[in-house]
Image (cartoon, rainbow, N blue to C red; front, side, top):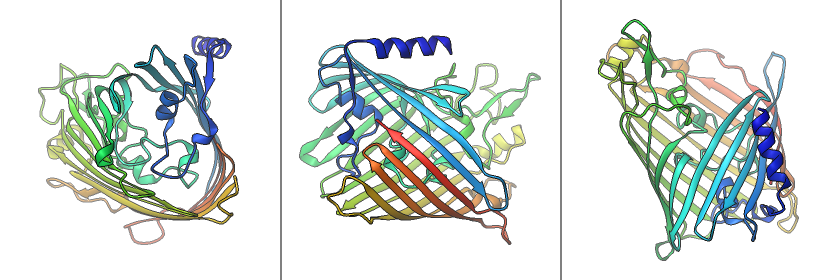
Length: 392
C-alpha cells in the first residue's frame, strides 16, 4: 500500500501532468469514450495524463438494513512515450480494503486507426465490461446479467489489434488472451472446482494475478457506427479454461467456452436506449461437475433492454434521465447429464429510477429494483439503491 501511495504522489508532483477533458463525457454512443480511450487520446501535449472514477453506493433489500459502501475508487494513469507508443493503467481500490490492477497495457499505433496492444486488458464483450464508468450507464448498480454471465469486470493478459475502418463505419478488436481458471488441485490428487451454477464464470477470472496459462483463447468484437446516434456490437470469445500442470490431464479439469454477444446503443435528442444479448455455451461440464461436485450449467443466456428520457432541456448542461431496464438472465439455461436446472438461477430484474447529471462527470442516482426468479412465490427481495458517481 505504501508503494502505491508513493507512486500516486510522484505522479501528481510531475510538472508534465495533463488531465482528461470533462467535455469528452457524452451519452452519444458514437462519441462515447471509456477510460482507456480518454486517457490515450487526451494527453494534450503532456507526457503524463491522470484521471479517476469512483462510486459510493447505498443498497437496501426489502425488510433489511441498508448497506453503504465506497464500492470502488479507480486511479487512471497514462504515459506517452512518443507519438506512437503509450501506456495506460487502472489501479482500483474496492471497498476501501482491496487493491487491484484493472488494466495495464501498452498501445502502439502502427498506422492511422490501427493499434497493437499488449498487457492486462478488458475482454470486449457486451457494453458495460468496456464502458463501466458510473457516468456512462443508468442504474446505481451495473446490469446484473453482466455480473452473472459476462462477467464484469472481465480482464486478462493478452495481445492483439484494434482499430477502425472509417470507410465502412466499422470498428474492430482482435485479441489472444489467457483464459478462465476452472479448477485447482485439492492436494490429494483430485480437483477443487472454481466455477459454479450460481455465478457462472465469475470466480474463474484470473485478473492477471499469477495467471495459469494452458492454451490461448480468442476474443473479437466488431462495432458498426454508420447510422446517426446508433452503435451496434457483435462480440465473440472462444477457447478453454486453464489448468495447472499437475491436474490438466484429469477428466473435468478444463471446460470449453463459446460466448457470443450482441449489443446496441442509441441516442436521439433527449431519448436514449440500449440493449444486450449474451449466450455462452460450455462443453465438458458433466465431467467437470462429476469431478468437483459443482453444479455448473452447460449454457448461460441473458438479455436486457433499457429506455431513458432526459426531463431537462437539451441545451442545459445538467441532465435528468428517468429510465427503466428489463433484464432476464439464466446461468442454468441448459444443464448436462443428470444435473437438474435450478430455477433460482433463472432471474428477472426490472429496474426503474433517475440519473441526475449535475455537472459533466458527476451523477446522482436512485432506483428501485423488482427482482424475481423462476421459483414459486416471492423468493427474491426487492431492492432500493442510491449512488454518487464521478469520472474525470
